[in-house]
Length: 560
Image (cartoon, rainbow, N blue to C red; front, side, top):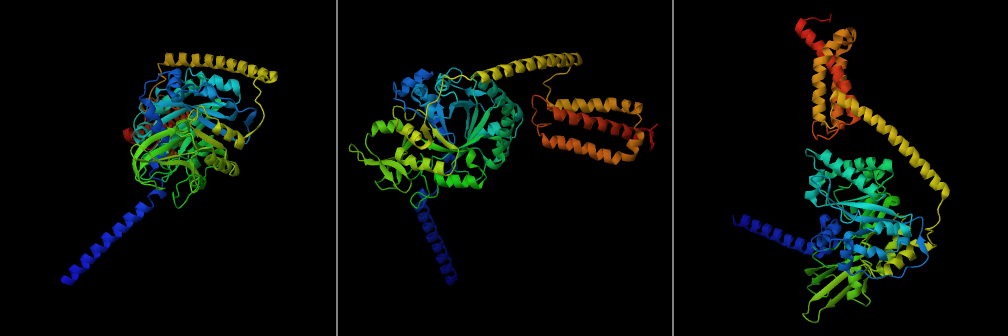
């Protein structure tokens, strides 16, 4: 008995010791892995939340609030290489900062943002999209620049609301697609960026299906479709292999590896894995997505123009966090620290590590500057990636360092000609517009004829699929027995009844499987292909029902 008790005590003691060892090991490697997938993918969401409750309303108000510099000297005669793209987000809170952008060094600007209402597919706000002078200013300096509208939906709850398989999903998606088409046409924009952050595992397929639907709807008008990817996606929620044919550019948000919830202060965007900072890094993220099938030719590598500040328990590097002290833009960092930062050789990141004289607090501020971004840009060039995605334009307002680095790594000497007009091209465009108008006029006449016919027949164009289906079935059961007795099909039915029953069932089943909106989601309109399938299936079913009824009523093997 005592022997058994001793063994049990020893076993329990061993387990406790093992647990302490595991806890110690976990604490030791705490900084060596990304803290969480959600945090890595919520950098944009956190910044949006910070500014959403503030007072400024108009673009000019935001410019005044941010203290936008009066003017910044242009770089000179530099343009982007043809082989690279520089994509930059212009968040609404940057206000009039675009007046200091060097548009010759940008291939794409994405306005941030269309804040999605997940319950309707419409927007909560689009801020100054309809009126911003950014678009005209950009095109005046760089006629080749692409203007995109960013659609944002943040958090598992909102993404489940919009993408979840519940009644009305089809209508929400269509509302968003329709809304985007109107807004893109309004500003003669070039496409959209989907920024759906922290999507749940259950919504993976729905997200993939929606991106396909959106791309299919926008491509006839030559609109571009881009989307963001989190730095860390262990569950492969963003199905890049499946999405690649439908998406023009993927922007990997390669920042937020250390963030507000980290237990240790560390680099926001470490370039490579290391024993000090762990495997979470830009390089690791690029490798992970490459294994999933993401082509470099469609990949933009995210670049943070911001840093994170922590109060720490010591001046060690790395140091345990005592309290998170907030996000700082590159501009704020340069204004507050007008001297050279330290450089971490393991992560290729800049940082300040200091102790406040007034209260003895240890502080660490980690960010990226021209020295730390230079090797990242070299990696982009060497890896033949499509380019970089800047989060965010305006964060460096008043400073030219980062613009100069872009010109040095991705630019060539040259000047964009904003005055030359190609008359031949204008003639072609005018001719195309004339053809388009003639086609619209013809389609309009046809549409009027169809609408008149519908009105005469009493058909409503917005009938939901279940209603259409049930009406068709009812008409079939009532009318096709009569038609059957008129049309001599008895031999066909007699000889092939089993096969026909099988074919009809298969058609109905396939129709429901391939368009799950039928009898489930209640879309606003029934697709044309579904209408054809249902007509064929119900017509044939009517013939078979008539045959069956005749057998039952008249107890005959053959019809009269």
